[in-house]
Image 1 (cartoon, rainbow, N blue to C red):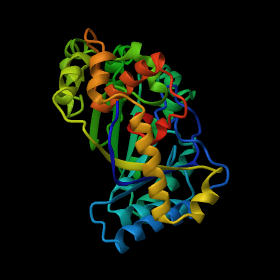
Image 2 (image 1 turned 30 degrees about the vertical axis):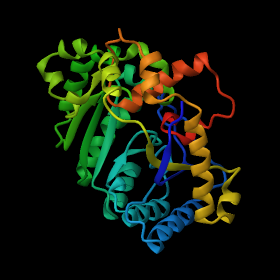
Image 3 (image 1 turned 180 degrees about the horizontal axis):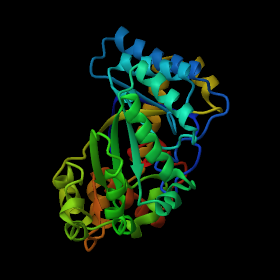
Image 4 (image 1 turned 90 degrees about the vertical axis):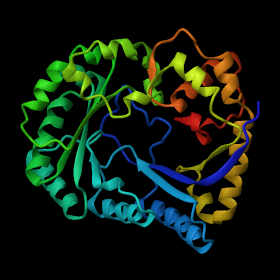
Length: 343
């Protein structure tokens, strides 16, 4: 049953930036929206761990963070977040995700893009699930499709590059040609256009009936097949993931611990040392992993060897298998959010 765990970093999250709407397939539902956590309090905690890493010369220790559902923050807070990303050496805020943004008038959106381009953003990303009304249904926001189309045009006029992400589901494939026609009609430079299935996480776990198969993907037109994400050759059916799970070692889980900051715990977190926080999270994470079966046991007992549905990653598959296990064996006091099953 046991899964040994080794800490290799810390992933710090807080629900600061709110979402203007809630997609029916939202994959971030483990983040609780905060009412009282400010960007200053959040960045202070992240900075403490960056300093802890440097003071203790922990070169391989990762410090990562995520502060909410969207990038819809004030320019001042956006700059503070950008400074943090520069400190940890990633490029996160070079890309502006359009999901969850308030619908803005053209002149306001133009200013919003211009200000963020001035301080380092380079491109915007729009995610589409189907076309027009179908997209609006899944994103749970009337007019969202037209807003994204407009936003990409304005972003291009400002000098930002555009990325388009298209979600592959059984129903969206029926409208994919129409969607591509609409996107092509924008006549703007596209840095990247890629299509891929749902992750198995958050609310998307409710829509397994929408999950595509390899045969379905291969029966699409050449035009559609050319936009499949460039890691498509690594996607596998559940049948194939079962075999793969038995070939890779899962003797030890080496992952970052998850520090989930909430209105209820932030005062306590601020009063604790980095060492105490890491010790507490490591202990609790080890206990959580010790409560669940090994990767091999999940694959052996809770996988469906007849399923041809496609999943992109092994952790997608493990999360599904664990859900099946928990239906049979509900666990008390299992802190799922501390594990990679918490997505």
